Length: 169
Image (tube, rainbow, N blue to C red; front, side, top):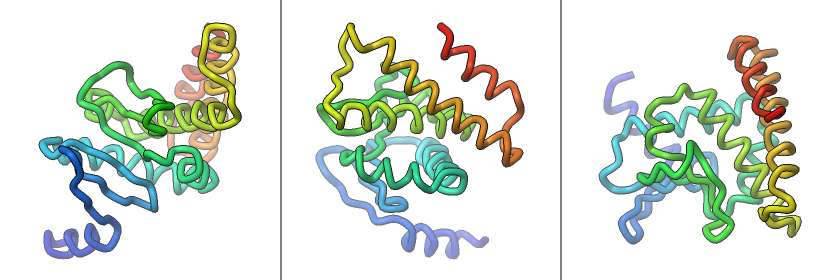
């Protein structure tokens, strides 16, 4: 595609709103918040991860829309690879994770954090008595998604095995 055609596609697929140092992009009806000075490659990597979620598990997009009202945000603070913030009702993807990829790992992280959001919406707080069980549930859902990726030929068996290994720790 020529650069002009790409920009036309960009305008069709996204709407940008500037708000307090962030640029918001509506992507598949999911709000993606990024800092103004963010490397466009990071935005593209997260965009590709959301596209992967849409292609492999369209139901997850509906859950993101329902349970992540604050959307998906790229954070310049690398607190973790990704995390759910109940206060912001959003999934944050660390900039280093967004930069390093690969796309399937970013999608797995968003999938995991959406499960946290769903559990939170049911009123179960992420506190010490519930932490281990919540992580087991989230990793279990992540394993299910990894199996879908594998079934579609989008990853090798080691991705599924790695996700399963995290479940046992």
